[in-house]
Image (cartoon, rainbow, N blue to C red):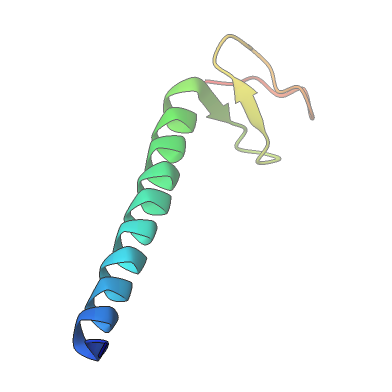
Length: 63
């Protein structure tokens, strides 16, 4: 039984493409969620929940 090398390479490229698509969509979804759910402190750069009025790390007022 002979193996079709071109078909095997194409299958691997498609699988790698789907793998990257799944990982990339997870990164995009997580980034989108963080932008909605968190504020970034301008002075120290830490993430704070939207409900906070001052930074949990440095204590400055958040917008």
